[in-house]
Length: 278
Ligand SMILES: Nc1ncnc2c1ncn2[C@@H]1O[C@H](COP(=O)(O)OP(=O)(O)OP(=O)(O)O)[C@@H](O)[C@H]1O
Ligand SMILES: [Mg+2]
View 1 (cartoon, helix red, strand yellow):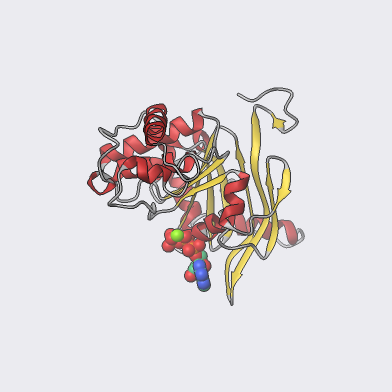
View 2 (tube, rainbow, N blue to C red):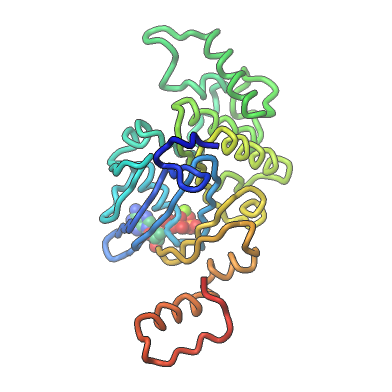
């Protein structure tokens, strides 16, 4: 997948994004505490967690909306800061927020190029149309015509347009916040196919999701957040849905908590009760 001479290659995958010790508080609320996350090129990492687990805050830290209070972010091997959305964009971190931020009354091409029309002071309509088609075709997007207003597209098609739009900046990492929420079965399948195209293009994909079926269908790894902390990082092929849900709800908290308790209080007897800690 990656060039073997690349200094960042570890095993077969190149690390594009690495977070360590990310902490973010809002007043008395600890939204994120000591979060680690690693994303490789050509990998889909699902970030899952219950309401209030810190998923959106993590997305906002990575997209330059909220600077973290502590911790480090490494992007393509270099320590970086992401103080603003423009900084995230310049680095190559694209975010598709849940509300998609599309203009309903504009057509697909205009939405794709909104704010970055080709050539200063002159819209090159033909080139924008050609490039729009090329991009959507590369993504195998099922959009019948790019001259229709976005308002008339299905939810899945809108998601596709929003993702295509974020790809124009040529990002290395793309963050999708709940990309299949509120989509029907066929549209969900369409978006999951699209996520696979992104992986094939070598992007690191972070997908926030509540839907375990989607996560296990498309993700390579699952990072679980619980109460603003890491609560498990699993390879999808080695984990069951039940195990992921247990980590989300805290049913496996005992295992994790007891394990750390056992570590710090070696001499004290701790009953781990037969479960296998990671
Ligand atoms: N701007 C803010 N000001 C104050 N508290 C906030 C702010 N943003 C998030 N929080 C708090 O931080 C915690 C994590 O919230 P976050 O929105 O990141 O959770 P989430 O995992 O995205 O949840 P959901 O699944 O409900 O979207 C919550 O307790 C939330 O109330
Ligand atoms: Mg959220």
